[in-house]
Length: 197
Image (cartoon, rainbow, N blue to C red; front, side):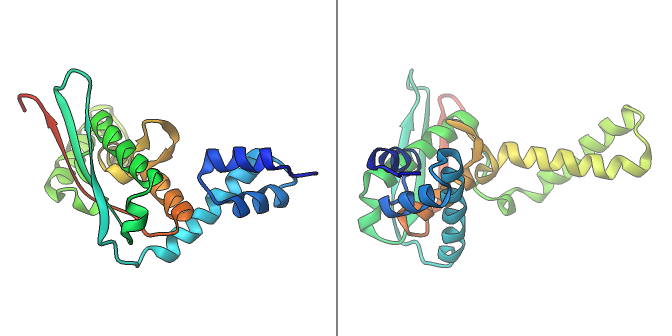
């Protein structure tokens, strides 16, 4: 199949990947747009893994104030160089993350930051619920583990489904941007303010 510039441009706009990467992905998939998107996402994740050890001392602080001015977010998103930090693509990513935090109300960035005491309390609640429902003792631990995983996906920023695209987590979004921008990116911290809280 003939790969024309319009197809390459459209794929680039959707994925943020470079022109040559888009052309290669379309050639590799015989012009199948959806498969090309998948190929680029897989390559982005592979590139993200290679960059994960790189220092992130640059970046920016993005903000989001919700309509009505009663909810606001500040988030620190870091990258490797000031050059990338000043790009529109990086700025848009940081703003999207701030908006997501306002909507989804995570309690921390990574799973290992969740207070162990909070997890213990949740486990106790889920165990008691399973017992109250008359579940067999031998499967209660599996039920509790499953509910803890679901809970983590609700409260840990990197595991939450992105509010603009429920098929991707924030972690997936970061990996894709690492792939397209070519630098390690980390969400360092955030603060979510609600009037009166």
